[in-house]
Image 1 (cartoon, rainbow, N blue to C red):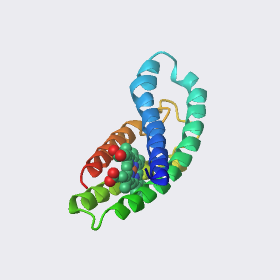
Image 2 (image 1 turned 90 degrees about the vertical axis):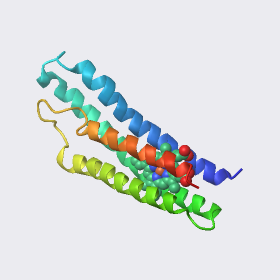
Image 3 (image 1 turned 45 degrees about the vertical axis):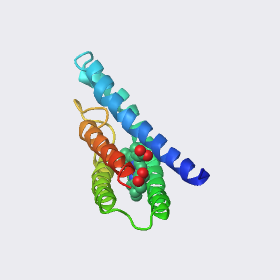
Length: 147
Ligand code: HEM
């Protein structure tokens, strides 16, 4: 067993589970559960706190995902003489989607900080981020079985 590669893969997976799982919770549970229950003014302080914590947590997770993703590439390439074409193509697609996903986060931090406007969601652009995250995981699944 390759201990370092496994540990790295574990950190990659855990970071992704926490981030994408958190987004799924916001989109599928929190937002619909709160809809129409409270005056929008009264959820502002709550959303402000969620946003602060989400931005802080996501910054750490993004750094971990990029570092462990890069190391994953190195570990996988060490196992192969030559990377299959399909693997390289899907890695390219995955990285393009990761760039879009990471850009939404960075633009949110720059332009959607606190306090939230009345009527804004707790996490801005959570739906599109979740969809991108799921597509990235699809690319990862294809990568896994293309070598
Ligand atoms: C939001 C960002 C990301 C998500 C959601 C994600 C998701 C995943 C998942 C779920 C796996 C596990 C696949 C498996 O073992 O079945 C994986 C593996 C992998 N990831 Fe990521 N990843 C992300 C970012 C990155 C980045 C930035 C890189 C490269 C710089 C990267 C490179 C890899 C590689 C090379 C593997 C192993 C693929 C293989 O088995 O051939 N990932 N990723």
